[in-house]
Image (tube, rainbow, N blue to C red):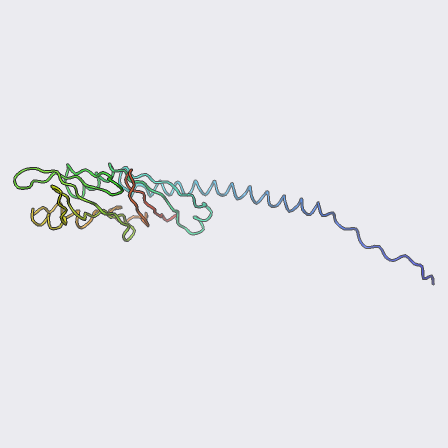
Length: 204
């Protein structure tokens, strides 16, 4: 038996380029499916937002935030960005207090309600400083103080002295959404254009 026999040949190796090409094809398909899924889910979320927007006062605009739709659907809640104009806040406060001349305006990063009141037999315009906060899933406007003739006084004291129940409503607070709602307000801040709110709404 000869000792010069050739060693057995190893099987040919599969080209590495073919393996890499297959992986890239899979990744491209997954990316396309992800984009298509994101677009479709955004449509689902937008429809849900449009239905929930009816719970908010007129003049409050709502849009989906930048969170991926896939993430929002996975959590079952859509995150929103809402804006409330001074006009919308004025109508809301007028409806709650039955003060038809009340006017809400942004001033230096705060909200001020300008209200004509009968004081000492004459009608005077006073500025009521409003605070705003997210409480129990709602945005709440509440009066802090009133400024008149350069003097700042607690509004509840002024309301009691004048016997004005309408002002007491501002002291207690005006909330929206007013009724039970699927929209949950999580944050709120004042801007020169009114209010910017962070909110959530259930998708399913």
